[in-house]
Image: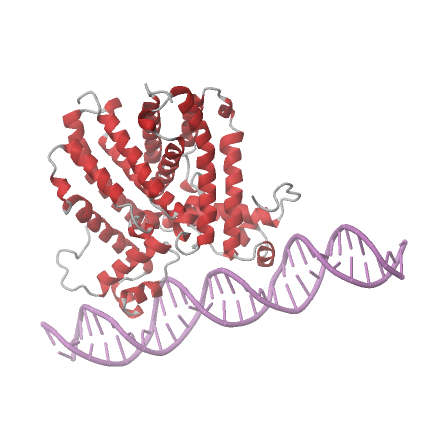
Length: 209
Length: 209
DNA sequence: TTTTACATACCGACTAGTTGGTATGTCGTC
DNA sequence: GACGACATACCAACTAGTCGGTATGTAAAA
């Protein structure tokens, strides 16, 4: 997808800036985070910033792409439970994992692209598309697992994998907002628990096919 | 709660500023919306702004309070279905209503306080609390109806009314984000449809009590 | 009835600081 | 000696908030 991520020779300014953007935007939002602030957090100069990115918007796009890669690794590759064979059990382990992530301050578990798209959907179609691409990539990847579970166990009401996948994403994004408002992940975790119950009920005695 | 909302003698600058803030913040976010912009949209001067509000933050608080009142009216008072007697049917009509609201551009149906808290939870505890108060007021009001439904029909797994209420709120807030990312309410409506199916399943053959 | 006193609602120029972005310079490597 | 990777200095535009002033009350004293 992106032009240069086959080899990352140095952990240099570019990736440090993206990491800093991830952190600051999740904490403060996109508009409230200035380029100067990002540079300071990354420990690089403003010249370095505009050497690597033509604009703040372009950094947003790169950070969204990097967020996709990071999520794919942290959620779909590294965890041991991704090798559970039974697809329904693997899906439920996925939900449990997302629930256990809800701990500590919100900026530690919330979604970079979800935060960014909230502010930019109307003012920058570029950022909106970049955020959408990241969210959609997650949902489409998850839908593969859901499809496998449906194939093996069946599902109620002919629910589609991709539709359930977007619902899971919606519950998570919504849980993040509740956690931010409450300044506590308690209600958010409860919400994901409701989601897990729903999924289990969907796959209970569902018609195969 | 607020000091002066018993009588609203004039639809003057103050309320025009709050209305403009609701509109602009839902479209652009809180930080990206300047005081000048709000004044221009409201058609009043900057002097008038700071006559009525000591700061941009104070406008945010007032706008959150007004949002609560607006939601209570638009969702719990005016619609005809709020007089449906059967509490479960009333709850399901509520969900349908929230789903049918998802139409047109996102700034027309998304949540002012949900947008504001996303950006301010870490930087302004004042705004975070104001947003939380609005969200919590909605959830607690809805929990009254859910409790009535539980009392009449019972519910699975001993699910609590307030917990389900926050889950409903989470699904809605998450649906808003998906709609913003997709620039279309389609996936958001599907997500609320999942929510409705979940609620119906929760109340199917639930143990009374 | 007029005058004085004070309050509310509003205006728009101004300021001090911040914003994203640019122009130019330096330094090590190929 | 050209080039990529950075740094320093700078700018015009914009930011939230201030300030002196005006127009319109309202109510009691003269």
